[in-house]
Length: 404
Image 1 (spheres, rainbow, N blue to C red):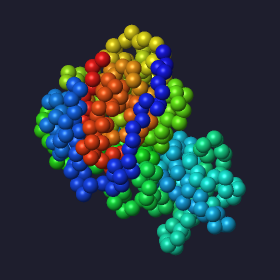
Image 2 (cartoon, rainbow, N blue to C red):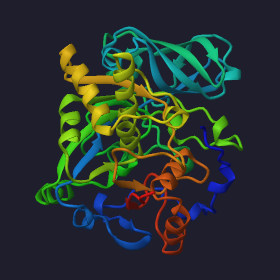
Image 3 (cartoon, helix red, strand yellow):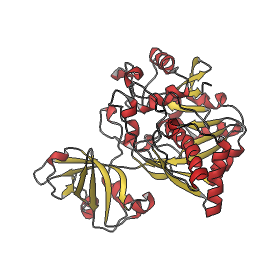
């Protein structure tokens, strides 16, 4: 049954001065809130390895943020901002970034009402010769509600990945209320980012340094990765009063057979770095169900976890995916999820969560509440009272799942 949840019950007062507008000088210099068995304490992020159970399996999201924000100009002088959300043609990210000459994206277009179907040219205020030689143009193909399909064309034979590097900017969150600066090129990206595709960073990973990662390994904690490309929809506030009326966007992800085998064999705790890793890992159970019942994996629907009782164990579900992959000769599984994790959700894989502090009335705050058995207010009151820094460049927390 879809739970009845009112989003106003997940609100709190977040003063603007508590939002971290810039990262700290050192990634691991942030503070760390620890929550376990209803108790909240304060620590330093560099100490995180000391609080992770030995023998755990820790999962990171190795997606990479792309410079997805582009600024164009009409002949009238009007400025149009185009924010690339997900590829349309080619559909696959790898093929898209290798595309030459033209491609199509689903985009959010600022000032779209001022765009009268004319071809836009990239805004080039500093008369860059490299930008000139690319001659990047944008044509409006179709309006689709809040998003639009935009076709990009360019001239110099470069792949689209290079076009974005030269012409685009890193899309830092709007609540920072500033333009992208040089510091964001490095710091709005995790150290271990590998696969291009996200339009927002999996920010829990921004705190990790090589020395923290080395200390994690020294504690006999195995590390693995998933890759979920973060879409802008993940961070949108819930606008409807009832959460049941909020639509989650699809986010593509990739998991390896090696990860599945480690999850099946793991006898210790499973720790997820970030809510994106949680959503990927918890989606695996429902993909396993589709393998058992339909003989193949399928995308995870938003309300699948709540629609009925499932008779399968987590091990059965994960084994069903692994068996399917072996039968098909696959080392990677590509799928997608719209899963929403709200109070009442049954966690089947993740025991420990490393995460930042999230916006009021957001789906991410609902996930936190589900994970800590409703204790989110205690955690956030502590963080506010102890001057923790909030949101993407803010401080961190390590949360141990509250048993139902």
